Image 1 (cartoon, rainbow, N blue to C red):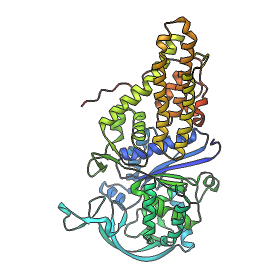
Image 2: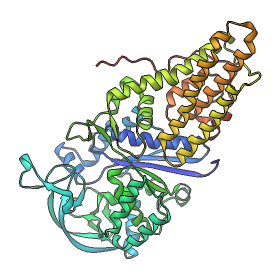
Image 3: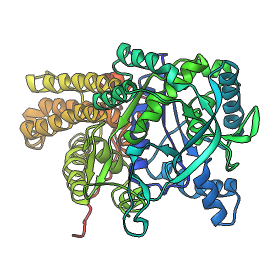
Image 4: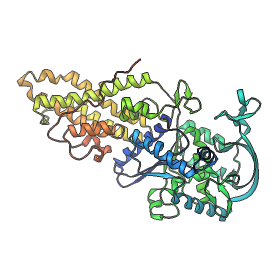
Length: 519
């Protein structure tokens, strides 16, 4: 299906000053699962993540901690961001930092090119600036302050006072690209997904685009503007370029041609940067626009979007320490329609862990492997005459394989998992109706027993492959117990129903042990 084609997927680069919470991990896991699916379909796949390390907020925090901004960023990357990837089992191919030389040098090349082509001019700008967001705010994005900030205008996101700034800045002629952007959204309706996100972006651009201030001169922590080193590049303009500097823009044309364009996975709060400003920048540079921008929903805790200031942020390790990384990955991608907001609760997580992972998939795997060990001395049986029930399982294996791959093509990760889960449910129902434990008591039913176990064994192998992007740890253990060759990650996921397995099973520990949740 997918041999040879390339697939490049990115997460946003996360603001290094933030404390990683389950919202960040959710984005990482979504991109990771999609990339693993494509990789296992034989595509030349590349997944990028990283950190955004420039800007006034980082400079101020570093100064407050008596270190240089680079030392501060190094510490946060080592102690917070790289460990996050391990916590939720991310198999990224690259990790870019905006302080990398490969990034800074090629941001300057990009900017110089835009300047030479006449897309940048000098102007003055006065406006309200939110340091937390690192962006100028329009009047509609400001609200009256309360409490200690009464009488002041505050940012609607951070609830902190904004600063009135007046600067001589360099501007990008973004307004010139409004018609081309609208044509892009029209010609490629799936460029921005989901549809609610697309509608928001189209309406925003239709209402008129301003030019974009792309430099700051009041501080110096950032990439220097190449023709005027008294200015640094606006942090968002700098950050967006990571998606091309990481894959060779400006220094390795062959690698850039191999990887670009990318599919971007972002939170919906940064959708406009990625679906409006970024493609306009690329158009100005004469480069291809992204493959697409998917704005996923927010994770809500107690009905509110998670935030550090409101103490609703939950560290991923609080979940993985109890339930494991596989359960984290499965829960957030199956319980929430990808693209919708989703509410997190410990009760829902515990219930789904028990019902779907422990009792559903985990118990199925344990039963099949244990019955082959018990009734066949561990030797994988061969099917004899197939009945309608056996053929139905094989048909569901094919359907689950096709539907999950088709869903991933639409970035509908929850649908891909649901398609595989149809096979989990079907196999559990098959064992209940065929009763291999009863067949084992009757020597005359030996052929039927072996057929049922052979069909269930193959179905379990198909499931191991289909679920390996979501449950990498559990499926690796299952693959070993099935006695199958190689690793589960080496198997073609778009042909999971054709999987070739082994001849001898070995013991399988519980994939999802029972967890007692205090409550």
